Image (tube, rainbow, N blue to C red; front, side, top):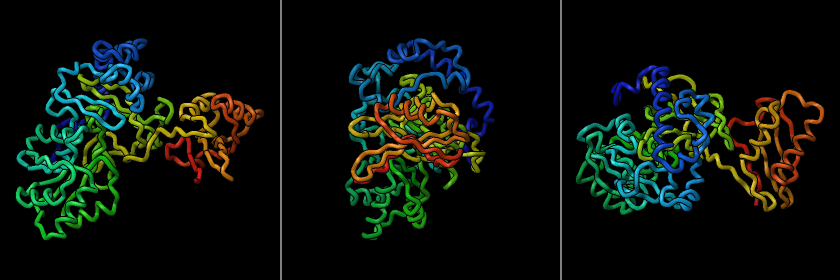
Length: 409
């Protein structure tokens, strides 16, 4: 087994100590150089931020808040510690949310991901992420440059030209979305074009259905997934099929209960929260809005970092009931008032076309007045009336849902 560097196989204790030591310095750096974090972390002593418990007390920065933050303080909401004029590139993702690329060759830390998928110095990579507006193509290009790979900037669309370029250039592998890779391979088969040099692929940006993975494997293409965001870059990556996604070495990753910043036990589904050590864009407790869970035990590939189960849905389950928005944070507020309750979930239905919400609560016993106090809190926090249903501990699904919209239209 070939590893990118010794960091991948260090002991979990050594990794944790290293990352938490760096956390205190990153908090100090962010407070000093980022206008947003100077305000956001003003009440926290950087020197005390050296444990998981201390990390969990720091406030979240939610991805969905970036649009408003950037409107208030353009162009990056004050989160950046690198002046826009000194950035290598600036991008726009849907929202719009603007992102910067610093001056490191591999700003988004993608070299490790490509190496794990089998790419090596001298390989040619056919890059079918977009080179227009969004950073997708450049995220992977930076990793390829650091690894010593050449890039063909295919971008998206123009399927026939993509196939012809593969016939002529004989690339070793592909990066892009899995759906577009399948379209290219189908076009090649339809025209009888030989693109058999394509042996590996790293895909991201959308789900990888098992049927697509196996279809490509039957044609000799080993596909590995990467979980990344435009702000953070690589978060976790697949090393072996079906073994989860290994967390990238340069990150502290937490799984928290949606609507809160409270970490959940390993195995529990929750929102992915990431703290990075990029000096140019120091994101601390960045709530991605994605759901996942930590898998038990080490990866069979020998890498010792924790593993994520994969993308399990969106954490922002805000919904509108009778014209009023109900947020996961409101359900979290109710849960905090009742420590005797386990999991809590608000289910919204519309029998007869009328919105109805029911608060489902796990508890081992129903004490005197619990029902009336719960209903009163539900009405106080959401400004809406609802019903209540109790269940035994463990009855509610472990899927990270705090609000479940079951309405049929």
